[in-house]
Image (cartoon, helix red, strand yellow):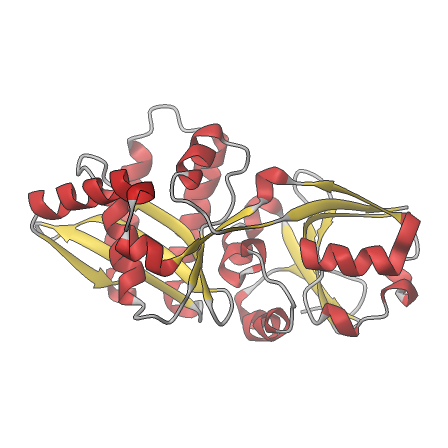
Length: 292
């Protein structure tokens, strides 16, 4: 990873160095999980460099814009950084960093809420147990799936990645007119899955019926108490498949995590409705920021 002013493409060989910086962040949103950066690196032209004890991240497609720097924000003399002395634009800035920057930059800073990038955070016990009226429909769907199918849930291992890739290709093929977003997501999923055994923090699960993978999920440890779900796909010919893969994957984590981050809705109304229907306990807010 470059330590000078030159950025270089995000790659696997520096992932542990990056994760150490990420662990020092006071707040970690889904955008900054390493598998997310790596999976979408080609689509967004993601680059990074190290300077001032921080990992600086730049998106180059469709235009140049900075993401929030990664590291211990509380130990940085922000106003003294030469790279922030002039105009600068940032996206996906977590709320905790915005508060620190407001104190450091005062009137130089302007921020706009980026609602489409808010992370949805849920209680793991709630999504496993699906208790109460607010989860009544989800519970019914789960029961329908479990009563109607002889299925097998297994943790995802490197030796079943090819089967998962086949299922993903089949799922993508069902989309009659896939949007640009779905095409890009398919490429990101393939990039992550093909490097599943090289991405240190990844975990996943599959559901098989008749020996065939009909659902899968891929997640990553985001912090000590939070797991993030990067990708989740199911064969909707099996009613309740999404409730089943979600429940069995989280249950298999054996209380390692209290919270699950299911990323953003990106302004998609259907996705927003679906994410809200699972009753988030928290939103992780992010902002677009400009320094004059």
